[in-house]
Length: 454
Image: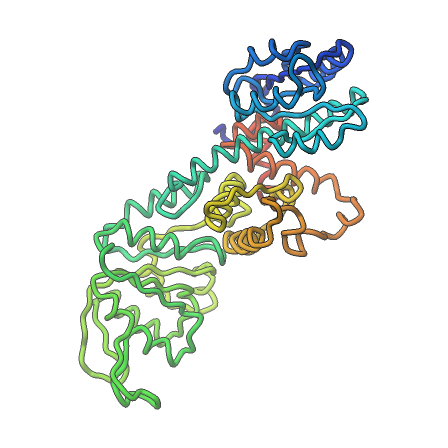
């Protein structure tokens, strides 16, 4: 990708025009279709004879096929069926006269995307073709994303095409088999535990325990006992000896989530363990030793905790041997569709669900303050509520259905641009492709991503 900067936009690279098949035995309709679609920037192969049209169909040759319903010697239903067999990736549209709506609906059931009703004007045709082409591109991207998801993504359980995420995964792989303590920083819901598990599985400790401790979920007086154990009578309620998480994880990995919430007293004991690999259980004078690798995580910047005095600087430098930073989902726009279909497949195994375009628009325009965890919850809910194999706006949470000024159809120009850029980033394989589609240079796109937090 080109470096940000530069004064003027570079000339966009030439993009091959999508190829469209048109089949209609009425010469005037065929002429109007050709004129309108070519004016919309499409390459058109037009046929008055449906048998000649079928002879031209090859796998992936046509992006879209416009098929008249009433033709001879074979009708549009037959042509539709043959195209579905010969080129499943082609998006088919049925052209129907007034009064043939029932037949058009039947065509949709057989695999047509939509129908275009006669009579129509050129502007209507071009807007309709643009909608169909968007759907075709989206379907192609869905197939590609499913292929990426089925191959496992960039790392075990980590699904991404984002360059920064890939860098962090590569770093995690490089240090996985070392004894170094790792600090994972990132907002809530960005996948810190998943990254910690990835490191553990890539290490020589993979057949040993991976033990998780949420430091924010336990009160101060219990966290020390949870980590290091206690002996009978150490405090009220300690009716028997109890092993701590470090002993349970001997030979493996301890994952300390939200480590910034740990009290100063517990920080002292953790520091000693990291320095000497030894500790005492609460209420015991016997020193114990275990072989444990520590991975810590926080949704705060520990440098800020140092400034306010809530985190020890000597522990910070010990725990920060290797730092991995996970970007929020709003900075991984190229991963959004990938993750949507990842969760779609996870929550609907064996089912073929579709996300309707209007629902996808809402998902891609959302800011995702809860990051991947929020997306996961939204997709699980949507799959559960899916109707007739489809997910629409009705299956999304309330905040996706009514959003401020959008209820009146009024949004700002900046918001419209932000949503469009987010959508294009979501279906493009990288920033350069997105810049070509948007017809701006990559430096401008980089600045707009920074402006809109995409």
